[in-house]
Image (cartoon, rainbow, N blue to C red; front, top):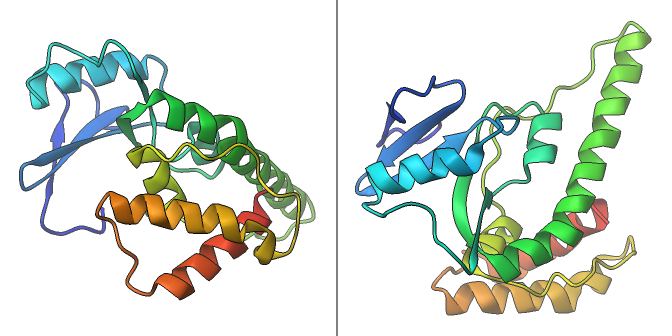
Length: 193
């Protein structure tokens, strides 16, 4: 982990390769193998042992990976953060943004395999993915992912990106350089439609 102020702890008797808890101050985070089955059960253990809850929320939330598990697995990530995410936001992102991200990851994996078959060494994916403004939106309840513009023009994404950044600002999350970050996010959306 690139954060030096925290520490890795086990989740009960689970092997670290399957799940671990990252503790930074008083905020524990559950990280799981994106290919692990039973991840909701892992969250139940985390909720009981680390959050003082009876288990996962009964309604209104989905237990899900902050970074899409399919894209994470295809990109070779060993762990992805798991959270209780508002159901409407999670499902909105899942049927649009995350579906497109998984398709992009599949295409990248196919390109890497084709390069290997030609005897060359492909560029491997990043071992660590940091949160983007899009994943922060998912985690904080942004539910306007009705569709992604089918365009290679970042201007087509401008209204959606402005709504995302307004939502994040209302949640207390502010970009250091809003105009630049919005432009970058609008451009990123052109690559995953």
